[in-house]
Image 1 (spheres, rainbow, N blue to C red):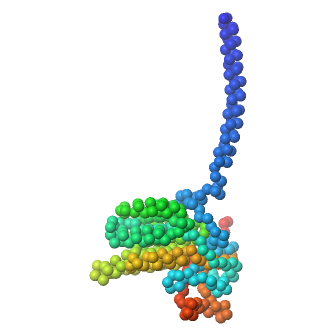
Image 2: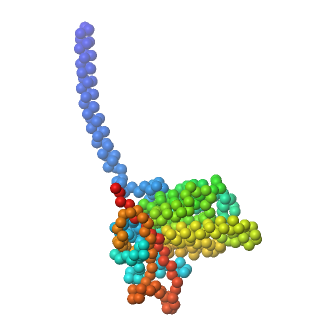
Image 3: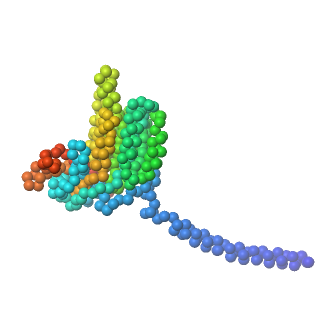
Length: 375
């Protein structure tokens, strides 16, 4: 075969390969272009995915129709209110006309009202510091008893997350209706790593993470109330908790142990004041966020405490109004909720089945922060 024939054969082969590659190139590009939309179509739509939270991937609780929320967009305020007797039992069937809402001492016109129940969305914030929860101490045992006891009261549709704190808060389990995740998280509470108990930082961090969650939500705080080394001050903590708008239900630990030590002269005047300040902090955080505070001395008190928390969270009145002050100045607006007799304007008298007047407590937020006009 002559050299010319060989060269012509090679040139023809190169030309054939060029045509083949040219055909495969567009086909490959077309295949890739089609594959991308197919991948996107197979991926769940954003609305169907678990809604991400600052905790991580949060399973968004299904909100029933008419579920109460609290928004501070100034156009409309939706406020959750619980009315409970001196035993913590929810008082139902109070007419809308008996509710009076004052915003900065100015009466507001109620535009919407309903009473209902809904699943709970609860974050348990548990103090776990070496200062108070040393392994197998009384406080260690009391903390676990309270935490596990509260988990036992949750219903299958309730959402719960677990956060433990010492020097800093740690998310042990994210929101889920799967209680096994919560119990697995509790297994990590064995030996505390640090002596610090930075209550302020842990509460604010958790409340601000939960602030964007819609529906009924709350923090169940199980702690001594002591703060040892937080970056935030008490005043800053109060302000930021009020802005976050998450009710706090506080369970104060070490009550019986403190009384025992005080009776035997083991507590000095400074330690006694520290414990009193700790209780006052827990009460303040609970009252100003629309929650409750409890200070049990006996283990037998825990079941009634858990029942009171469930009563307040599952059964609530929802009142909606448009504030008379529409200024977008970023200021804090105080809210006062009261029950009145429309006939004379006096406090409403509630009686039991026997006609005897009963004492009651109104649980509601202390206020909200108005949005600020963006220039």
